[in-house]
Length: 326
Image 1 (cartoon, rainbow, N blue to C red):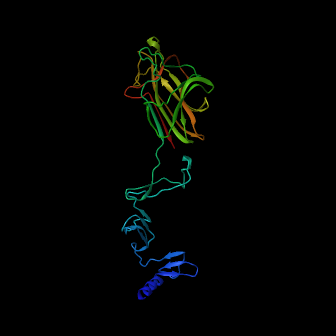
Image 2 (image 1 turned 180 degrees about the vertical axis):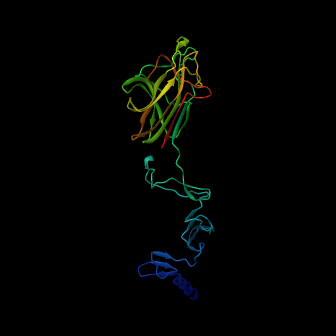
Image 3 (image 1 turned 45 degrees about the vertical axis):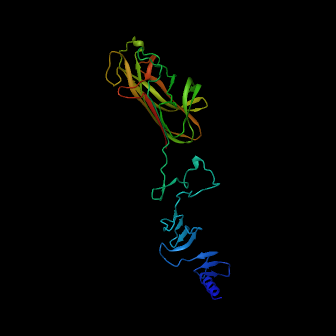
């Protein structure tokens, strides 16, 4: 009987049942259905502790509001301290699925440092890098200076392909590649246009660099002028198979120069870098774009297929193309 009285007294001492069905532990005025008040004021003072059948601490709440899960007898080192060794720490089920375009504030990319602190993970740079390591077009014959393209007609467009081949050095944007057997560029017919498709709407930076050159046709022509030829490097977007110029960069070819840019009188040679840089915004998914080269005018022209994008002395590519998502 004495033992029963002692147990009952301890229960009364520890628990207070208020008139509104609230339970208080170590407090006479519980403010919730279950209100626990710690008896110490140090970080290690525990307000709640749960053990398993092996007497291993599973969960604890300390006086300073920290929660420890599966950390044994350690004191929680953060507001939420979870030891996930050998188990899954957090599993979410039936959360809403977010599209890539929804990854904006307040949704953030979070990660952990080696000490377990939460940090923001830097966004992966989305880019495409293509480097054409051969002369273009591949049909060009450097012995006879034939099999290239002409630069004499302002209505002729030469497609500069970006392909999924060994020249593709990286593609984290997820750009895809295709060919239009027949298309129009500014109302002019162009066959076998090799294009790229941008999967996500957004703002992109496009950078192109290449070296154009024209040699004397079949080693029989004599060029004596040292003037200039104006050319266009063109960025165009498509609706179906209809391409329209978005940006034109005007360049020029200087006469009587060799691969190194030095005066070269024994045969007429043009070799000049052509560049294009454009910030482009697409508002629709799967936007098709392509690059073109075009004759604009000048002191002379090359009506034979004697022009190409060559590999200059000391270089290892004829042109490269970089896209980065801003």
